[in-house]
Image: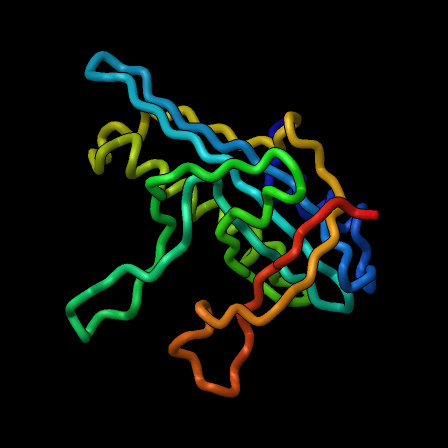
Length: 195
């Protein structure tokens, strides 16, 4: 029997960080994602170290995601008929986070702030989106190679899940283009070890 990593994540969050936890207490965990193709044509692989931060000071759960070496950005599109498209883009300079202070160097994206949909919108959909991005990278867009793909997500044992302290503030850049009264998008700052 195989458990989806998204189910494991949400179960851990529910257990470790109950609703109405202190506002500065966030739960951090990592997911290692890897995808490989080993076939006669060529071997291809991709991997991501995905960081999640969860905040639950009330009935709602905020979910923040960062991927080492990547940032989430709006992709320029000259066609005005298209919606703005955003995706994870690889950075020139790699960013790694081995301790709580280094989490401040990552590019955080708030994926959800909801009482129930945080499980699907904040975790499951994000992992699916990253999987699709990795699939395109590994197959080079050749859908016939998809059947040869081996994919694995696991809660990373190298970085143990832990509590951190942080402030959650309005993300001005992520709110750009939204109505001025909307300050929905947030980001964690001043992340440090839980005291």
